[in-house]
Image (cartoon, one colour):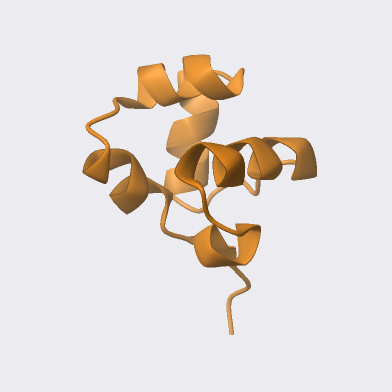
Length: 64
């Protein structure tokens, strides 16, 4: 799944570690999501959407 996570994180000057702590996952999970090697769980995606004040669809979208 494609995503804008790295850009959104950088805009807020958050490290992967800081974002991971806020969301409640490991830094490795954030890294894997940003590299599109792993899709987040629905609860994790909701936490990210709430943090960035966006809809989930504004962060994540299926590959076409």
